[in-house]
Length: 209
Image 1 (cartoon, rainbow, N blue to C red):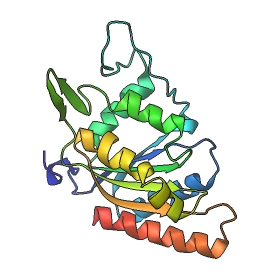
Image 2: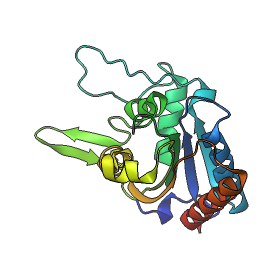
Image 3: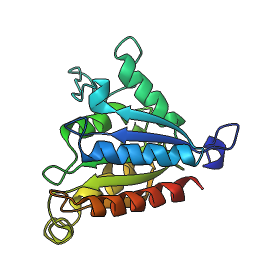
Image 4: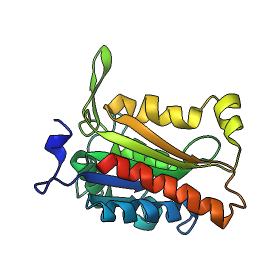
């Protein structure tokens, strides 16, 4: 399916925003507001997975005979079922989260574990690599760090981005086309926050034009 085929009947981009954080009113929540506001200004159709506010359970529970998580039915978990449908619906993903221990918070990793599952995001093949099922989608990654950029990029070799680019998204066929990273956010000044928000709005606008 091409990106154009995934637009709605009015030609509007279909965007899924996923917010995974440990508190509802932190910096990443402000960034989500900026993302949603820009999408509305651009006339994009959008849906939001606000994991903490939605009461999302990030724990994947498999039966002893299950090798991979199957799609979730409405009876098993209506929220996860909706999330999986909306991943299929989306043309563009915007992923917003703070970086903890140079990785996504558990609630965001749980979204990967429970939503990007067999027959939704990929299909496992005996003796071969999984077949990606979300080819043609694009993603923007928005991350916040307490640490400096040099620590993330040089000491940890960008592992916080590589998790998404090479593993979670790459395995499903989603292309990471942009990243907005805010470093040293503890004590972030109002002036710098406004500059970062402007940078984020520009990145979102570039996705949906």
